[in-house]
Length: 181
Ligand SMILES: CC(C)(COP(=O)(O)OP(=O)(O)OC[C@H]1O[C@@H](n2cnc3c(N)ncnc32)[C@H](O)[C@@H]1OP(=O)(O)O)[C@@H](O)C(=O)NCCC(=O)NCCS
Image 1 (cartoon, rainbow, N blue to C red):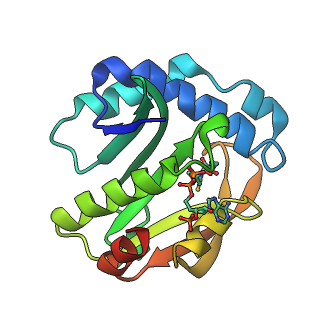
Image 2 (tube, rainbow, N blue to C red; image 1 turned 60 degrees about the vertical axis):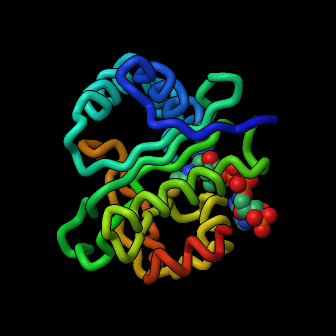
């Protein structure tokens, strides 16, 4: 299987949205409200992705993995979303691989490309938030991510249900890159 990493463009908005909805429904089926997951809309997500992908000057770092030109996963980050986390200067906001392509090295390739780009842009430290109980926490530990703290957040942002979210940090992106090589 030949995995290629691309910088997605506006024409990929729908595919990115599709990955978002499918991977959320798969990864969070035991963690988040079932009705909320069922009602996730590819169209709504595609609008969000269009806005992100059109903003060429933004500080976002976005890469997608493709197999035979089909997008099968993506990684998306930029400056930390919470002001108090500014010392970890680069945050990964979203990192998803389609279930049928997980465990095949796609995530590692995306993570490596993202980290290289972050270092090239002058970032020193990384962080990522992961829902408590998500098996993906194992991936962050495996790549030497360090558990830092937890916070309860509403999902969706305007929802009444709050969930525990755990923060993992990578104090030195160069060390992370070595670990991924
Ligand atoms: C996390 C995710 C992106 C990883 O991508 P992937 O393609 O499955 O991972 P890879 O196959 O590249 O694995 C890379 C390495 O991490 C290890 N690994 C992968 N998932 C792991 C897990 N859940 N726990 C422990 N180790 C894990 C692999 O064994 C491999 O180790 P190696 O390099 O020593 O051989 C993917 O599993 C995913 O999309 N998960 C669901 C979505 C999600 O919850 N995303 C995170 C939101 S915070």
